[in-house]
Amino acid sequence: MIHYDRHAVHDALTHPHGPPGLPATMERIVADKHAAQSQVPWQELRARVHAIKEYAIANLAWLLVEFEKQFSARGGTVLWARSADEAAAQFLDICKHHNVRSVVKGKSMLSEELELNDRLAAAGIDAVETDLGEYIVQLAGQKPSHIIAPALHLSRQDIGKLFAAKLGIAYTDDPQALLAAARTRLRQRYLEAGLGMTGVNFAVAESGTVVTVENEGNQALSAAAPPVYVALMGIEKVIPRLADLPPFLHVLARAATGQKLSVYTHHFLGPEDGRTWYCIIIDAGRTNVLADAATREALYCIRCGACMNVCPIYRRVGGWAYGWVYPGPIGSVETPQMIGVERAGELPFTSSLCGACQGECPVDIDLPHQLVHMRRKAVARGAAGKGIERSAFRFWARAMSSLPAYRRAIRLARFGAGLSARIGWKPGPLAAWTRHRDLPPIADETFKEWWERRA
Image (cartoon, rainbow, N blue to C red; front, side, top):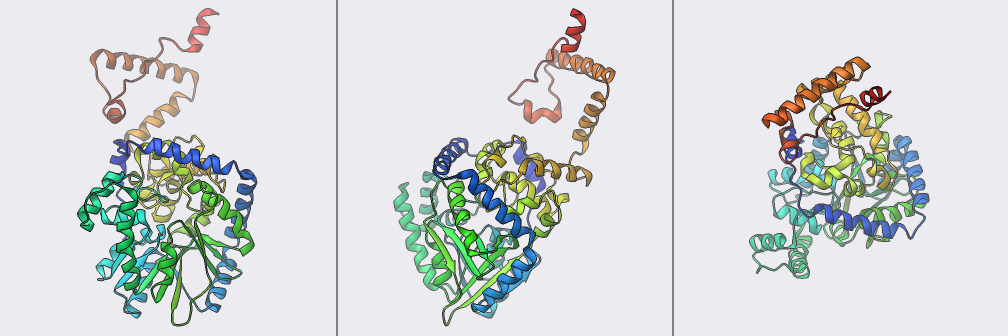
């Protein structure tokens, strides 16, 4: 069921179409975050959360079992799923067992991995997103373009037109009026729903606590209002102790939105009488990331979106161009391993390797080196570097192998560039790049040739 359109990704990256205001929006977000980060010992916090995640990922086996033990002791039921398909089937079984016909969803990127909305609709179950950004995207029939701000690509005028068409209200682009319209409709859905669902930001092993972080209050209502609650949790979300949580809360808010602390931090400690709780712990390709020592750090990710905000590629093309749930540098590392290098092996190449992502990451994940490692893996498996691209790099490697070969290549390139300039021809494989650019001229002589001539 996992959808990934390789040709669509290639087309999107060849013909960038990100929202015109995206770079400016990203600049503003990053400036706000840096201001918030300057108020705390940021580098010390980064080192602390990195160390905690390093320990947690190295000890996943017993930490997850301990979380299951404690969550179950509090009255919840833990289910384990190896794949997205298995997790979705378990979710649907829960709905069937409790005769659920309506679901309210708190924000969860993991539910996007499961394609849960489509699967619920196919089963005749009405599911509604309760996070405002996710709700807007759902009404528009779209996918999130950013993991923190799903509707980042839409203006308030776009949303006003969407609400007028879908909700039957008079057109307005006033944010408060649009928020009130969404809130009015969603409140009734909470009261009618048979099941509520959220993601998990952190799972505390020592106490079986599910921790979620949000700004709108919708996750609390999704968990508390319906009689049945399901938490969707990736295996990487577990941390050892409650005492380990505060530094994560400090860095998550500052890295994600520039806040000192998110408005709501919920600690779900088990169901009240008459209510039923489940936690589905999901692998869905994460053990592939874990098994590769070179990319294991990617599981330290706390889904703040910081690497996307500073990535020059993401800023240019937007989130949809990456073709799956997680865009930006972290997605370019994780996606090929979670759904297969053969299917998404070109994603690690959608990076300039400038290093901004690691510098911005609150957990200090070494994304640039992981991207290079994934490029190597993709080429080795024949999932990237095909056709003209592979031939070009082979030519470049031969040209750089010796001084005579280099000089021959330079003479050939100089001749080809001069000829194309005279006849106005631009190489077909470079058509997308040269549509708005001219090929750079090649110097009449190299520095070495110039030096030898003067000697």
